[in-house]
Length: 233
Image (tube, rainbow, N blue to C red; front, side, top):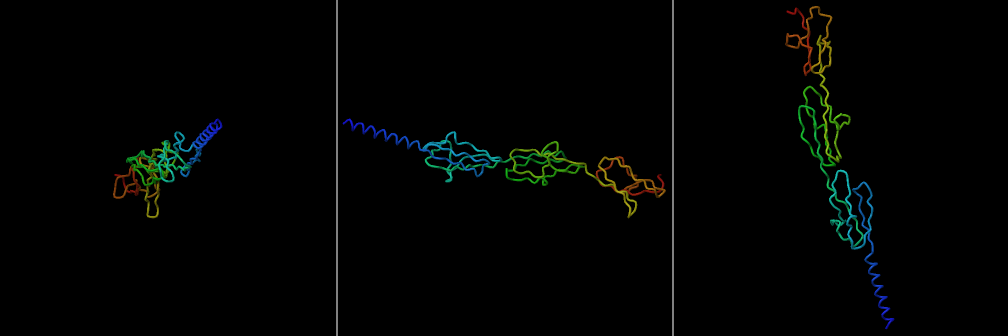
């Protein structure tokens, strides 16, 4: 009788050990890195357990992480129970970023929003400023980083417009074969060309005008002047 009792105890203990061993069987959860710039570490858990705090949130520049999914498109969270080896795939949502324009000119340009993978061709956004030529957009207010195109944004940005004074042309028309040209900017003072002849040269006038041209403050346009001769009465 004692032998039978001992045998039953041994069998019971053996059964308990087998159950304990079964409950402690580990499975591997794999994390796909197809969209990630690093290799995630596989995690081993016990069959029937959830990942809990081990289910981390990956980051990807320009995207918001939304969830993990299995290859059967089943959503997974920290409380999901796993019973077999599983591959998990991250799901990301592309973020939108705002571009603001500081034109430094006479016109304004409304902010533009683009997705991370979209591009903005900046020559399509050209402001105006009287008397100036628009050079282009810059990423910084000191105008050291030229921006010809914006793409793969990871944050909102501000662009700054850079200008140079417009260059105009002053033409001293002497004859059909002889003209002297001078570049100027609006507001410049230009010393007029003094011809050696004719002897009765008085000054320079624009076409269809008898008033001597004032070179002390040049206008915002190209100018052609012609010799006026005779007496200055």
